[in-house]
Picture (cartoon, rainbow, N blue to C red):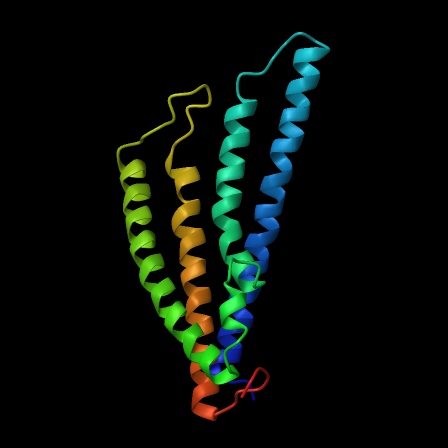
Amino acid sequence: MKTFVELYAKILNGITHVVGVLAGLLFLLPALTIFYEVVMRGIFNAPTEWSIEASIYCVLIAGFLGMPVAYAAEKHIKVDIIIGRFSAKKRCYMEILTSMIGIFFCAVFFLEALDMTILSFEINRTSPDTLRMPLWIPQMAMPVGIGLLLLQFVRTLLENGEKILNNDFTGGIN
């Protein structure tokens, strides 16, 4: 029978995977859009007015949606030169500390980003450029991405807490 932490991690990683695929597609879209712009401008002398703006939104959204994916895959920035010298138990405690700090900062960022997004929706704020994009749409990537990152920090906290409770410190220097 799976523990709560295992079930939580499985569900969260499934959601993160879906968000990662979406982020990947959003990174592909600007390439296609800019290719279209180059063809229209170079061959047909009919430049588009929307391609750069759409590309910027896609890259920004993909960046925020990609943060929890990078964290879950352990591709985020770490200071391995110091942490690598710790015993497995000390690394576990260090990960708990950094997870708590990450949860705090993500919670503050999440609340502020959500507040900004809701305000943009309520006052119908749009971009000043050609697309006149309702700004809450690209802004929504911030609370979604940061919220999922926060949940990934919670996952790390729970997994390391479980290691401490079970006194299971495999690997590393003892």
